[in-house]
Image 1 (cartoon, one colour):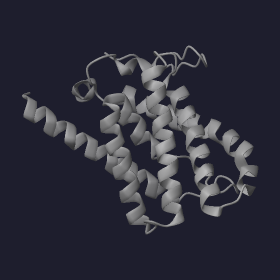
Image 2 (cartoon, one colour; image 1 turned 180 degrees about the vertical axis):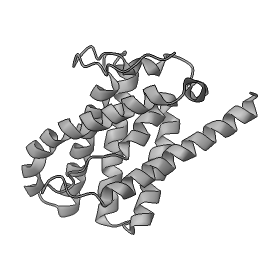
Image 3 (cartoon, one colour; image 1 turned 90 degrees about the vertical axis):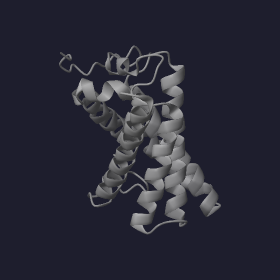
Length: 203
């Protein structure tokens, strides 16, 4: 496969990740509310962000995040509304935390741990944006509950991301991995939380 074909395939797969994240965002809006807390969601769209970070560079993953946020807001009709700014803040916070964890943890965190960090950062960023929009400190009351809610949702999203990484055919995902450290090692046992996915090994 020459360089141009590789670049075309990369662009195609990044587009698929952005589209998948948009679909998951739209799907989640139809799911029943998990909590009475404002902004408390599963965060399924973060699966696309996580996969982009694992398979590609942070710059490429950032493009996926920007595209899925813009497309999701346009489809939902919330572009440049308060909900849009909350969505931007959450996506930026989550992406920043997960990217930093992947590139700075030295493999100490698994996908599960990185996802939980992303969920916590997502809720913190949205809370800060809500404070700016409302011009009130009253929303800080929700902080402990949003942080607590981020644990199970981050775990769930991380688990799904781990399953996708391990189940995608090796021949498909090999060209997607950038040079440098093998980010597929993120599916191994986490040295901090001691959690292991216990998934079947690849052939």
